[in-house]
Image 1: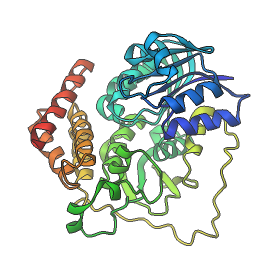
Image 2: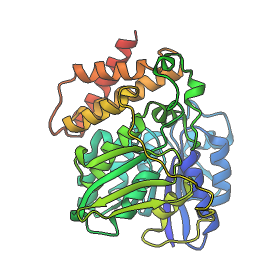
Image 3: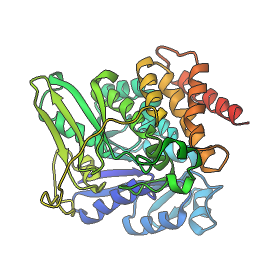
Length: 387
């Protein structure tokens, strides 16, 4: 029996993780849940899984309910202790667990991740932004505490599984695959007129708003490049990005003898999420397998770095290292929010990120306080550029 905590339980990753728990109650019990403000769904999850703790991180945005009142007063809902805000999150993550599922998106996951590394055996990580911001700090803490970090993103999970077939020192290169997003086939001149609704229409995956826009700009793949550098101890030049429209090969690893191992599966996030929970075991995921006879072609293309400059900016930040990836991530988060709220155009996202990166003077080995300060500076710079 593994006792798990699910951060972001009302989001896509969290709901899929709880579905896996639902189908394997002999293997998992839910110790804690956290949600941003979706109290209706969190209440249903509490009633079904009966965790010992539940956190509402933003009471101001949460709708009025009995659970909100309990969170405000620190009371119980049945057997579940209802906690609130950052203090509640810290309280939850101080409890010993076997697995913490990080389904929180964005940079706000950094401090919870560092806290979880003190008390859990394994971190099932679906958040790439924290590693982009502070990869050296996170990986150093994980090694110190002996915590396994098991990636949930389909591409990173694929690399993790392929590398397991051979020793790390025999890896020559990895190939990160990308669907190409919704705008692969439209002309560059039309990108200026792209609407948020169009950017959110991903051809393969159903995801949150921020990651959907990142996929449209290909910044998501740039963030994954930096994430992979930390997860697998690689240099930027050892990572190649390929457009693979079919989304069947989730990533590949090339070894020094010329052998290439690929992980193939249908596009269903339950597979990598379940593997992160059951690792090193495998169990039935309730997902249909691939039908190779229906797949006529598996194609690969180079990404268009000129059309999607966010990818070039991410690779440049990866090579600069130090605090540059933190600035890249912060500027991207703020620019995406501005795009979604109609303040800037789609192509302005990359332009603003580039301006902030040019203005930044990189710090070689930033500590946590410096990272947080630089993150705040980059966000302020984006807002100034937008004004």
